[in-house]
Length: 103
Image (cartoon, rainbow, N blue to C red; front, side, top):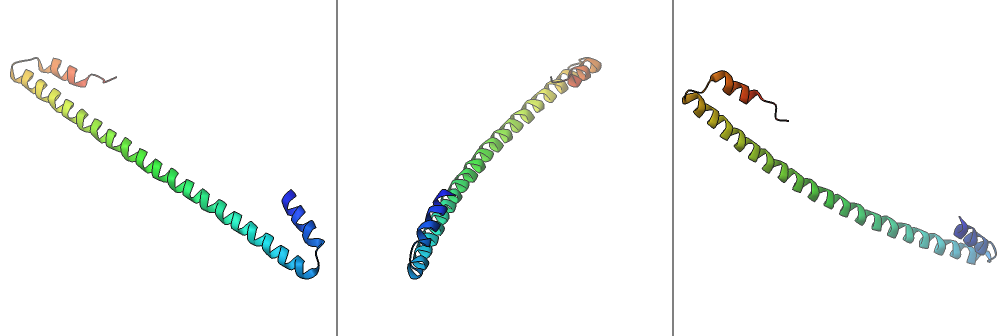
């Protein structure tokens, strides 16, 4: 890339001892910047993971509440149908109601 070309060009114009030192400084700076970049990305990924886990837990809790409510409602319906049968309702009609599609 352009920055690397400028660094190489600047290093090539220095005496050998300075070239080595300039290359070390440039390399250290590049590694430091790379490490900082990776560290920043790691923090971002960890935050995204935390957010995703929290969202999953919230949705899972909602699904559990909905399942409990649905089970309670089905129990009420079964109890009402049993009461209707005990009161003499037509068993075929009760079964037809029970077998109706939900959607």
